[in-house]
Image 1 (cartoon, rainbow, N blue to C red):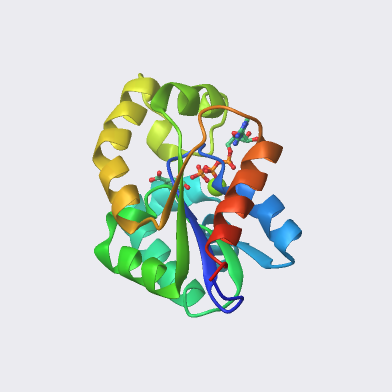
Image 2: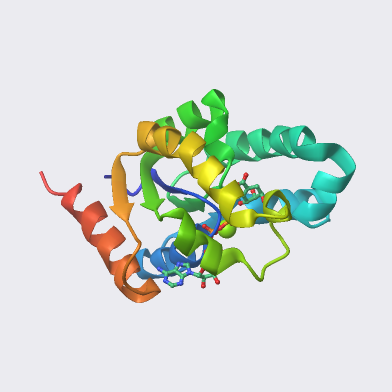
Length: 175
Ligand SMILES: Nc1ncnc2c1ncn2[C@@H]1O[C@H](COP(=O)(O)OP(=O)(O)OP(=O)(O)O)[C@@H](O)[C@H]1O
Ligand SMILES: O=C(O)C1=C[C@@H](O)[C@@H](O)[C@H](O)C1
Ligand SMILES: [Mg+2]
């Protein structure tokens, strides 16, 4: 894996893409960019507001623009939004821009992590656990399809997870 390539993190809401990505970038001396934050910076509003005004379809269009722009850059640690892999063009762009790491976490743990957070519009429903199970069933094959590395992250804290990701990446630098 060259310094030129991006390291792209994919996975469900609450998988740890933002948290792990930020720490990983620091350890590797890379720039960290979060696609969700980029969309918020470009629009000047938070993600729930984009969903309210433009619906999910509007958000996905903005997400595709952000992925297109960010995958043209080099040497990033790029955290993607949980639904970025739904779009085949996003998947193609992520794959072509570098190494894709899937942080795989099962729905019950995702639920525990996200249950008190109001910033994920897709989980503001009567039964968020059932929603996470549906989304997981739909998306797990897509994350696997796009990923070069799958890391099962259901156990262990953030620090050990960051080191595991780093180790996997280093393995790929060896001849
Ligand atoms: N391995 C972990 N162990 C314990 N807590 C974690 C772990 N990974 C993430 N968390 C916690 O779970 C919450 C969600 O993590 P984070 O926001 O990084 O997820 P995300 O993948 O970026 O989600 P989204 O797709 O919604 O942006 C945070 O509070 C974070 O501290
Ligand atoms: O899983 C999803 O579809 C989403 C995840 C978040 O990262 C945000 O991109 C948004 O809340 C949608
Ligand atoms: Mg995030």
